[in-house]
Image (cartoon, rainbow, N blue to C red):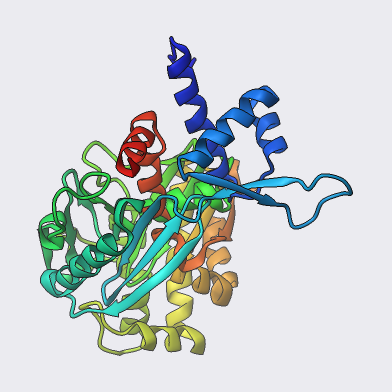
Length: 390
């Protein structure tokens, strides 16, 4: 039940359903397909599409291929329609993109930073303010992915950079009122998992496990398309469980964290190179390419930890993003040699497959986008859009 009690509420509900279908389907479905998939009458669908076009939310264009006769129309995002500003803040750089309904992301800027909160977030805030001025009412929200646990209200900790309770919205310093409300700040792994559930291998999967590897490792359980983020929003932290068998102290305050043995920092340490401080991504890539003991150690640690999480959570599939894709490709044999024996006997006949993400490094950025459109694609969000255009 949708809770609509009046014709106006039902129309608002159906407008959201139709826009959601366009967005989730990558803006590739025809009006006829949307009508069928949503169970709408043809006349109702025509009225809804016309209204959404009038509000600069959709426009229709001929399908690339169609049979003889009247061209088939595809519902596409309007050229002057809503934009989500999405950011992936990594330990050494950030990437900013403008995203349309349907999921197209256009990268606007990539900029390195010095690893400090002000050095990273101050220039980012200026870039976001400039894009907001440039696009005006089209900007319906800002989503920011960060490489650390994010508590409610946008406080982030990035342990190996020394960030403690950093107030991200404050340091961004965006002018008030921010379009769509305050920036949506989230953990990069949780956002990558959200994107994988919407546009990747976890789409339609009831229980999945997603792991994002960069300088260290994050992981989260995905149930019915939603990452489980915990009571305080800090649930995507499987990398800080003692799954690798080590006993080294971690910058997070725990001992023996799994992420100490997987990722760029682990590869650099195994190769006898300097590591930490969000530096050395290119050197780690060269270590990975060279193979040998550093790759084998990281792959085995990853395999053992995945087995433990599979035993605990019984997922249908495990997906890896970021550097995890490269570790799996280069060290698959070592990873599977550790993964298989780590599984309970009842899971060995049909072990969950371990797959590279369909989105690679773009998952966190696209997840930040999805968080903005999740907030926008509501009756209230569409009404704010209508009023902003007026």
